[in-house]
Image (cartoon, rainbow, N blue to C red):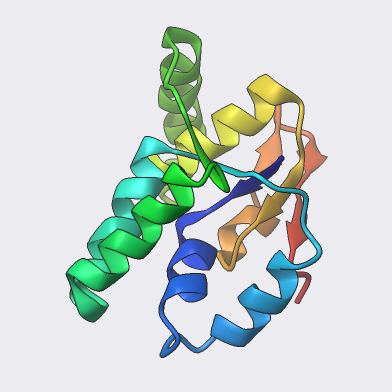
Length: 137
């Protein structure tokens, strides 16, 4: 399982995205399924709607329906962790979607993340451990 941010999900589906080829090639080397949170999924849906509407929506839902993308539930502990992270990174500021993904990484003890977001170079697991960002830039 590989944690993923909204950016690669959008880029995989939208061939017009600048990082489309990079994300499709990277996907071939990742352990499936991809895992994300509902806020990240919502962010991807919103961006895909702006890019192409229902076709992008259908493609993203197919990833879920085919079990290539898993949507993690937001447990009470994950919600609390997200709120704490947003306070901790208030100077960035950290958005809700990123906070839930960092909290999920902490909950699972998983530091590998498929993202195009440079903020994941700054975020730390439990305040100390760096993420292993894929693809490396």
